[in-house]
Amino acid sequence: MTSHPTAPPPAHRPVVVSVPERQDDPSTTPMHADSLPVSVTSPVGAIDEYLRRVVEEAGLAPSLTAAILYSLLGPGKRARPLLAWHSFAAVAGQSADSASCLPAAAAVELVHAFSLVHDDLPGLDNDDLRRGRATLHRHTSVAMAVLAGDSMLTLAFQAIAQRTPAALAGPLCAELAVATNAMITGQVYDTLGGLDPALSPRQRLEVIHRHKTGALIRVSCRVGAMCALHRIGARADDADPRLAAITRYAEAAGLMFQIVDDLLDVTQTTEHLGKRTGKDQDAGKLTYPGVMGVEDSRAEVARLHEASIAALAPLGPAAEPLRQLASFMAVRTK
Image 1 (cartoon, one colour):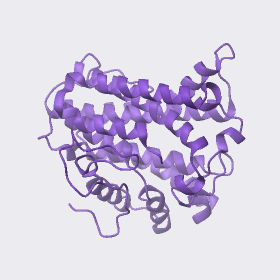
Image 2 (image 1 turned 45 degrees about the vertical axis):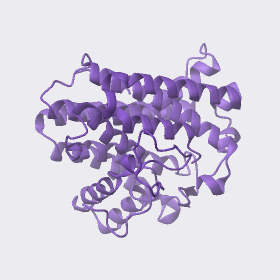
Image 3 (image 1 turned 60 degrees about the horizontal axis):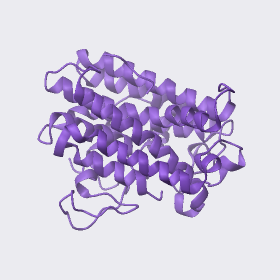
Image 4 (image 1 turned 135 degrees about the vertical axis):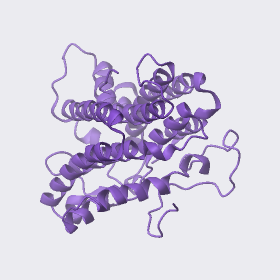
């Protein structure tokens, strides 16, 4: 395999997404900008409970555990572990027990949460607000935020190593490590520069976005599919058409996700998003609206949405939740 840069919920579980009251057929449920069908969000309770167990069973200092849980289980969409969960089902079939991909799904969310905590630090984006609440370094201290981020990063690999079959743990860890370094590389390019000056502004944007955001979206889908292939006794090889289809979907959806983020940064308010808006423009960073304009950026979102849906055609009805997720990511307003 080739690696690429690329129980009921507890009473205190935070509300992650709003869902329609009626549990309609997911193929006909209308897609709203800030909601997903319950058929897509139903794993969130199991995902949050599993994340809590991974952290609480790690034997960490109580203050460190509390800091990690504050960031990890705060309000959020849980898009990445949902992508892993539904990619598993798209490959193994909707009747398969997707809970077997929970270690990998939890690992990706831990890496994502680590990246947000460190991005918010004074030395990087210097943000005070994340998901409508104080960022971790404001809630606790800069020192604790640094250490909590460090711990979440290592907990991600610990979760895979200790909770998945040995034959699968190595490939999953390698896949996640490559993606994590790609994400960090994207942050370096976005924050500190260093891209080839011969690249056009749009080419530089795509390099940044495919690394900074796309790599974790890509690996979320790929690790779910890899767990599914292992479960059904197939080799997790890039030549497998199911893994190839999931990868094409993820690459389109990942870039689309970040372009939407760029658009939200210039079209929504801080109060609506729950984080400071306009900061990329203020920092002089490259963004799709800044390079292409708002309307052309929206057209690119539509193109990538279509590409992500087309990529899932070989997987049939089992991939319907992934289609719903792509449609949500294309129209979300948060």
